[in-house]
Length: 325
Length: 258
Figure 1: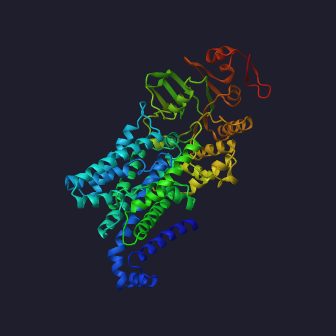
Figure 2: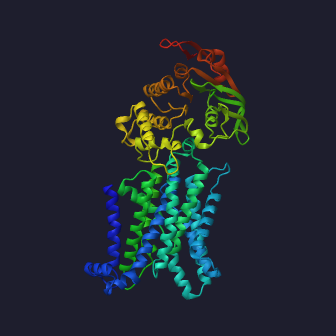
């Protein structure tokens, strides 16, 4: 319990810190004045300049964290996150493709379509002849799909006018620049609906965690439950991608880190911890991206990449050592 | 009411390979039954089918008057529980968290945890002798304790049928006896029907009322241990030349390979 409070406090602290730091530094007193009265120099910074980006970071980080944890529990492997398996880059590619082709579909729909398409491709390509799947094949096929979407994305970028191409390039690496309250409403609105669905599904996740046979023996329609959870997972990831681009490694890191801090074991508790941790990682990465080089705002994905890639390598080494890979 | 588990002309297999062919069998209610046979004879496959974990190629399985494939999944889970072979526990899960999940067939979609659920879990933990260790993580337990925790999970499910696939694998002899005594006790004092797949013929004879002996070509014998475990049947099922004598402790048949 106290550990969950610590986790939430860290998120709150990260948000406040992120509101204060930037090209214009706000003192805690100015920040407080701006937050409490809605007046003064801080109010503008909060309402227009930093607020929407930070709120989007919280929402996108939370949905990515939830999505990652769903797949990690479902596939019983800490590597099995939607960013490693290419789902988020599939969603990102679909959005860029939509821009190039001039499709009139809203971004979240494009992201959802792209994410689902990538997930289906990965699922089908990793099917073995007897109809079974192994997690390691899923991950490797997913990495392959990820490389493919990256290449396809680069190709599309060359087809775009220079101005748009530069913007699309930023967005593809995961960016929170120029977010507005519309993005915030979108990620929290869609995220809330999906989270509600996930609350209902979390009991099935607790049974599937015991293996398919036991889950079925305990009265679960395991195949249907897995489809449902995978759909929720893909849509949650797409919701995050739609507002922040395919930010890498947040979905991969949030679950294990959150579980480590809170010592949560039950899937429902792990999901909650992952949402808060994902939000914290994204807010801090965004802060680092804005503050590390004065006058230059790096894409947030560059920062999550800098922390995430070594984590992925460490995880791979550990999995190989324990023989799970 | 007749509540026996029966198979009729049951054929099971994977793709082209038929494992069980045209098997008609009754597994008596209120008894302890062990399914025996050499590796690859289909004993685990049969148990999985009885728990509806695999679909037969042909034939039927009935529980009482119901076709088990027509019963609602949750309704079946209130009548029949299965513990698969060597289940894998989620990392760090505690005994009580594991056992609580056994209540799921009894809980509504959003129903809160009820007093009846808590009572069933407490009883299950008590029956397997782990009540004072409920908050310990499963990975810290010995093999025997861990197996008892898994059994507590299916006891919390509160079913009249308990199916267990090789519940004694990987356990040393003391713990094997402990697990089988526990199941025997469930049968004698709680009226549970227990169906296990076992490897050890002598333990099966000692702890079961009813044996199903399968060979590579199908059913060899079925009935009480002294009728099933005969030198002739053992030769048919295992190609084993053995002497069968009375177990000096229990009087049950004991197999001594020549």
